[in-house]
Image (cartoon, rainbow, N blue to C red; front, side):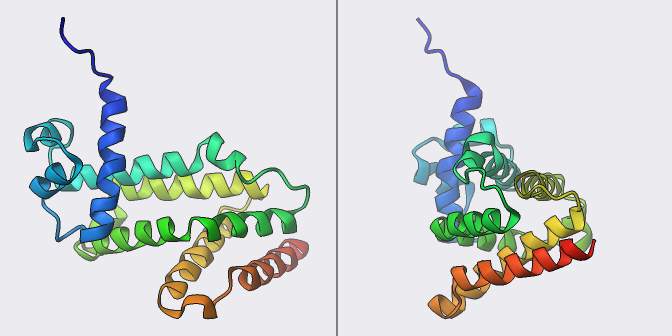
Length: 190
């Protein structure tokens, strides 16, 4: 009897496994052959699910944004009653996944480094992932201003990037308090 394979589940497993390879070797340095070998599948199997390394990476970016923003992931944040407490909880959560966030940022930066501004702006995967993160943040913080959500994401990305080369000199707790104060003052004026 032939083996029944849940193709979508298997595709997600391949994406999960490829994340660490991209993070370890970098987007431009790893080949499809190395990815296949590293995740324990044949090159043919990998090409069956992903026609190119770029397609694999783009599907990975969209998949990660979905996984990061699905209900179960957001439930870990709880539902504190005030915006200030929500910001604190969000920053506590992010400090716990800082290594993952840094890897995600670095491989995305490297992928984009290989592209022109026009290619980045028109890349569906990058746009879908960015929008998904913004919508999740709007929902969690209970804000309605998309520009404010983008600001918070930029702040967090910058914080993670800065901690990469400044280390513990940059405190998540301290920055959570600054972000909370900025948001509260901004929203009071609106």
